[in-house]
Length: 581
Image (cartoon, rainbow, N blue to C red; front, side):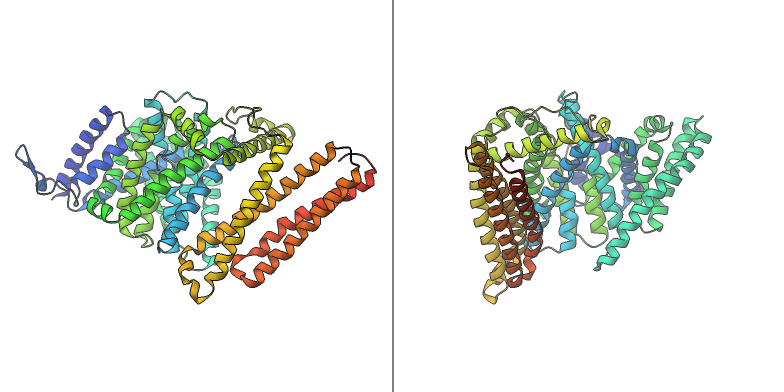
């Protein structure tokens, strides 16, 4: 098939699919992906005939015929993301928005990475795909919010802030992938340094040169379009030449223009071209999807959908709840964040091009994006049903723990906002509710809850440590495939154990302080708690001596800190001679 015919067929099919999905009130991106799947070399319509049209004659068998358009499309997608990004916007988000983004990305990343490694995939492929699973789609989410009439809700500012952070993280990953470090930490450190220095140069030097250049062509729309596209391509290829990816260069082109007085005008002028070429990128991804291969790798597809939807829902809802939103609002945020990012396709395709990710991953990932977007569109109006379902199914102990964590997070937020010199920046955070009486627990309830937590976490820590110990002996070879889960479970459960023991001891001492007993009893209580934590230091070093891969000695640091704090409190209690702590 000739290239001109392939382009003509592509544009026609893209237009028809976009029209169909527009009538279904679904994002056009999904329609373009489906169109690529139906008209590509692996099309299920091959060999069929309808209304006298033989589909075999219009199927594009060579995706490289539209590869150039797809390349320009990927560049313009990143350029558009860059136009929405600026250092000022980033500084306005506030600390707790960043923490919520870290929590959401971190939970999904770990779940994806651990699952892929456990299935036998390489660490590099697992890391790339796990990162791709962590991000949500900005254009799809905005379209869903607009179509559902929820774009004015109070959570939207928070959602968009998280999406901006995620887009920036994707670009950073693309920069690292452009020249992947093969084995050494030294090479990886150099890759990070190269990305950071390039960003600094772009914002401090390149932005000023671009602003002067744009001022020369600002009088003409035609010249502005040509200048913008040439800047995207030139900076993209220069970025590629210095060891970064073409996509990173396109992002930097947009981001450096974002601070220009011409940025809004350029965004409006370039928008039609962006839509056309971006459609070619998603269409080209659809061309690579082999439906038969996707369902033959059913285990991989289930993992993508399970992590990309199930874990993402839990992580997004938890992060939103701890950021201060009530339960129902957190369920809404979780449903919105379900849609997996189209930029993740760029990440996975870059990994595939570098030979780090198997080709089969790309098709399964594109299919998972379609599935997650449909699920998000369905759940976005069902926050009440989701909230009631979670209230009735989640264990009450877990709900109480989340309430305590939320109250603690909001208390920290208030403390920071009241004492920080950056008070005005923090006040720009999305408005959130204050903790209600329903969220707070009494001291006695906190003592019971943290004691139960400690008992459960102690059992989990011991079980995980025994799993690591037996994984070292020949009879425990079957545990090697689960080692990443066991190790992480040990580290997390042990750290949480220490925190819960400290909270339980604080609650117990608070109850003692309310009694008629003297302050010396409180001092003894603090001293006993300190001895207890120093004993934990010795236990963790002993555990490390028997199983070095456990890295148990790291856990001695919080144990030591808690022990010292307890002894200092005991000393203060004696020195105040009868006053309450």
